[in-house]
Image 1 (spheres, rainbow, N blue to C red):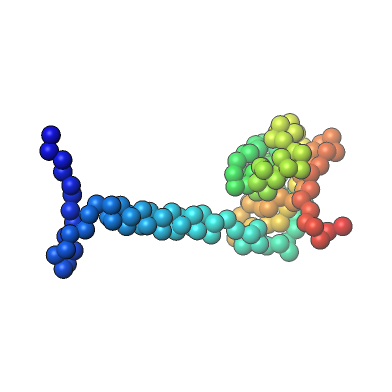
Image 2: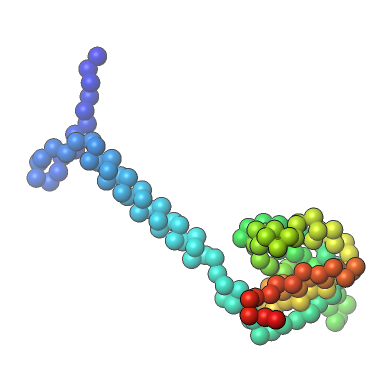
Length: 152
């Protein structure tokens, strides 16, 4: 059976064997992988990029949903506005891994679905019904609060 070897010609007309080409392709693949990884790191942002950390608010309503997904958990709360209309607010928080590290599970937060809750948060810079949750308190008084190492 004949054996085939693939040759690539350079501009000078010299032959370059296939192993050199695979090294070049591997190098290109590595560079592309680094670019994609850098893009995903760039996408992860500080809360202050999207939320106005000086505009704290406290809202009371009914917990309707808990999305326990990466990169941040999101809870939805129906809140009655001053005009009497029910508005669905969404509040982002830390990643699920952070909550697990501090001993909080999705089940613990999800048990509040359908119940009255109080949310302390900072509002999105665009003024939408979106915020960064800093404290969630269930009707029975159970609460979870995000604190930094500088707070006492």
